[in-house]
Image 1 (cartoon, rainbow, N blue to C red):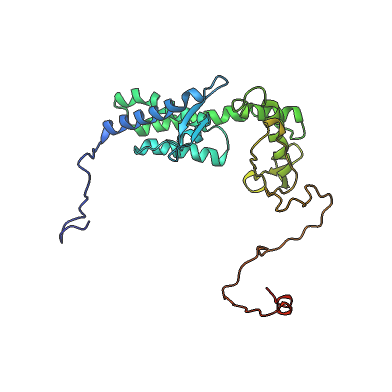
Image 2: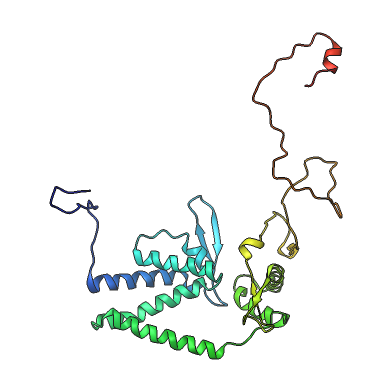
Length: 280
């Protein structure tokens, strides 16, 4: 709201609004990050536990995925919101590690708390974390090794490390095989580079070329990967065939549904012959 001439804008705030500055605000942010990390800390690792959530619509969600849990949480603290946004960005860019990135970020802020209480400036702390980041990247570069995408055993071990905590041991092998088959189906080679052993980089756009279709009934063992296009449509007539091999497919960019005309017409029929010739 604009104030009188010569004065700055006037801000109208709630009576319960609190303002924090300096060390008090920094410690409050650390406590908020600790609270967010503690929410999903027990969902990490092979002995992780599931969380039961109640969404606003009354539905129940049971999961141990960090991003799925945090997006159902309604927070107002700015640092807590930043932590949830960090999890969402991790899920969009990488697709995994949403729980790990929140726990690591929370631990880094928790370790910075004693330094804050000792009156160490945050810029100095950030410089130390930057040097540690560079050292970690150098270690990762030395430990990294080339992965052959045609080595099925090696690829299954990599996929198993990602989704090993998402399913029970009964369906783990099935899910790993389906995930690997789906990725290799939509993977496309790009221009020559240094991405793979063969000198080519692979582009995998799962969100664009892969789709998960859920059909009620059956078991997880009935799930398959289809190399093609799937439409979840049922037959409109009992005499329609359920299976057609080598069909001829017609692609249309217009609907085939019958639409009733906007104009209304009344037809008066006086004899049987007029009924037979009527266009109705």
